[in-house]
Structures are given as C-alpha cells and as structure tokens.
Length: 584
Image (cartoon, rainbow, N blue to C red; front, side, top):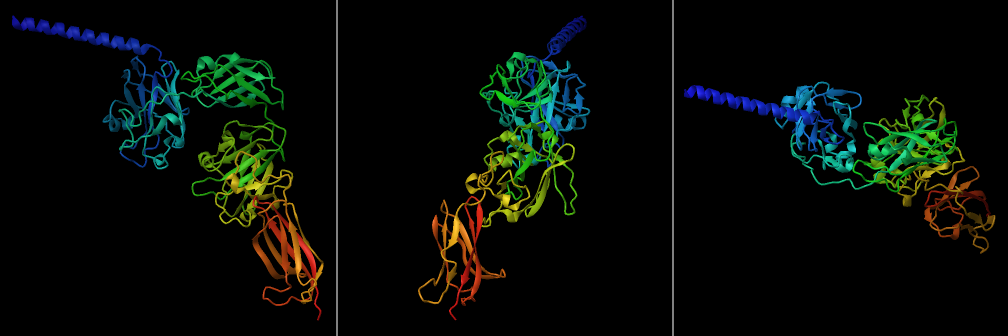
C-alpha cells in the first residue's frame, strides 16, 4: 500500500516538474521569439590576435552580453565580418545580464572552462589590423556591430598579440576607441567573466558630420564619426544641400550605420561645390548633432597633368614617426583620392606597383591638401595636423629611402600627374639632425624637380606641416638683401689707401647665416673668409689679400662668393668681382 502511494506521489511530482519545465521552455521560447531590438545584445569582448599566447587558448573568440531584460534563444543568430558569416546552430538561452563566448567549433573545449561557450562552423576571421564584426538576429537585423582598429589597444606591446580587447561600458554600445581597451587581466582576457576594464563610461558627445562623397549625380553619401540613430537618420528633411536639389530619401548603411545614402530630387551640376547641412540627427545614445553639422560636396572630375602637386615629403622619420607624402590640389576641380595612386621609380626607371591613395571615396576640393602615410596616429602625434581628416592611411606605403628616392603620382588611367626624385642634400645645409624633418615645396609655380624649390620645414612649425600650408611657402622664395664691394680695386700695400677689400651687406631681417669664399678666375678656391657666420641686419666682410696659407695672393681678378641662408630655409648667392693690385 505504501509502495503504491509512493509511486503515485512520484508520478505526480514528475508530471508537475515536467509541466513546470515545459512552462519554462514556453516562457523562454515566447521571450526569445521576440525580434530583439538593436543593442539588446552587444559584442562585449574580442580576441583578434591570439599569438603570442599570454594565457588564453590559441584561438579567436568574441563574447556576447545580453544587456536587455529579455532572454533570447541564440539559435539562428549570425556572426559576420562582411566576407564570412557563421550561424549559431544550437539552442542556447542567453539570459538578461549574462555572457556567452562564441568561437570556432574546434576551440569549444578550450574555452568551455571559462564559462558558457558556443562553437560555430565557419567562424569569421578577426583581422589583426582591424575589421568590422556584426551580430545579426534570426530576422537578419543587425543587433550590434563594431569596427575595431589596432589603435583601440592604446598599448604598443599588447597590440602585437595575445591580449583581448574589452568593452568598458556595455551600455555605451556605439562607443569606439574611447570605450574599448586592452584587457588588464593577467591571462590576456576575460572570456565568460566581467571585463577587467569594466567602468561607467557613457557617451556624452554629439555625433559629427565628417565629410561626403558622391556615388553618382543624384546620390550623396554623408559620413558621420559614429553610428547614427536610424529613426532620425532616415528622415529626409533632416538634410539640406544648399543651392542644390532637395533630399528626397535617406537610408543609413549597415552594418556600421555611420554613413547615410541621400537620394536627390535632381542632378548635381558638374564642378559645383555644395554645402550639406544636417539637423535633428542623433547618435545611438540620443545625443543631438552639434556644431560639426556641415560638409562640402560635389561631383568629382578626372585628374589631369598639373592638377595635383607633390607638396611635402617626409622620408627620414624619427624612430616613432612615419613617412608621409602631401599632395596639393592646384586645380579648380573636385577630385577623388580613391582614383589616384602613388608608386616609386626604380634605378632603371620602371614604376613599382601603384597603391591607391584611399580605398574609399575621398573628395579633394580646390586648394585642399591631403597626406598619405602608413601610420596616421604617428603623424598626428608628432606634427600639428590642421585637418586630421585629410590624413589617409595606406596599408602598403611606397618605400621612401632616407638618402634619396622617388615618388610618382598617377591618375586612374596610369597617367603621371606629378613626380619627384628627392635627395637629402636638399635640406637646409646647416641642419644638424634631419630625422623627422620634412622637405617642403616653396613655390607652386616652379617645377617639382627644381631642387631650389625645396627646403627643410621650419623649426617653429615643428619641422613638418602635414595637411596645412607649408612653413616655407613664400611669395618671394629667395632671400631679399644685398652684398656689395665698396671699391672694385684694392691694393694691400700698407699705404693706407684701399688696403683692404670691404664687402658691405644689408638684409631686411637679422639672424641670417653666411659663408664667404674667394675664388680666382679659374674657379680655384683661394681663401675661405667666413663659414657659418651669424649676421646682423647690416655689416661688413673684409679680405686682406692673403690666401688660406697666409701668403699674399697674386695680383689679378677674384670672385668673392657670399652664400646667405635665413633661419626659415631661404637662401641667396651673391658674387662680387674685385681686382687685387700689387705695387711690385
């Protein structure tokens, strides 16, 4: 009797538990069946470069965190980098405020010891030099995406590998490098655990309109510095192309939502420069756009010979610096940097493989400067870049040797637009250390290959002016002043009459430097009178008629060459012919 009652009791309990289990599954199924909202689940940690190993398994991973109040079944969710997409094929309920590691199927066992882990086939490769990673719902909506870069580590050692990138504030889903840091955990990361850099770090800054580019005559793309809210970004009346056609449609571009396609109600006019103004646009944190709410736009033209000039070049950077080349738009055209290329010319004159100045469209307006380099951060750290947005990064930067080399600018058809074969000897002669000092073009109107049209960037400009007007740009490229002999004939015979040759100099400003050398009519150096001598605004040089050995020079005609250099790199040579007379 007791046994039968016990069996009935157990049966009731089992049915009750089964019922509760089904109710739980139904509840989770109901909740997770809801289409998640953007940012309900965020990418919380990424591990792009597992080598060299610090403590974590030698496999890439991403970590997801549910920051919503809804539990989601991750089955059929997708992870993508744009070129490869992996689908979660198992049922997994990601509860509110919980974490899960997503990794390649082969790494599941290695990461399971850290916490909840899901392995997927075809896990997208996380590029070491930066990538765009996005998470998609079963309905193929983008729930979160990040476009990480090596600079997010903010640590030169950790960016070399073995360390994860961690999000500081999960509620700041659109935060970029200001919300991500290299892990400070001893193992290199915190998969399945709270991030080691976790902190309150809200987004309080407004979005900014950086630039525009055109797809065709009726399509303008507005580029913002961060993801914009789709509800405000899709409102066409929030955009105005001044003196241009009306904006009739606006569509944010996934997965980053930092760009918005704008369709015009009419065609843009060739050669016309427009101003795009935006209002009412907010970021995903709700911050309204601020004062950076306008940018130029227009239809680009093809670049022809002479439209662009090589304007500045740094080929001998400091140990922490980076080579760069600056290009100036001399024309009245709107040009596109993505249709321009740089390359070298080797010793036998053959051009190397050309490299695009920009992988994405970038408009260069008349009188604009753009600078290309392998490391934009290094250039910004060392020099005062007045237009940081005009610094363009090239993954494969042409070689620029420290002593001499060449750089060639091409258009999309392979036509040479400008070319420079530089030499370190073009630097200011009295410059002791040339590392980190750029060569600047002096005059747009003179030939690029004219060595006298180049000199060292000024010290008070930081030895380089990338993206800005050259420190050595002058209306008068040569030094102004004069050096004149007081008499055409002198006779060093001690009679008190013209015993010395005097050269009187006068310049508009002090602190010039001079070298004075005496040559005979055959060009032989007779006497080096002055070397690297500082000058006042006016003064006198003198020659007593002796040569470098201290012996009297023979009677005859001599040429006195005075080379004068200003501190900003200008120079001028003065030649004076004098006759040395002897009474014997």
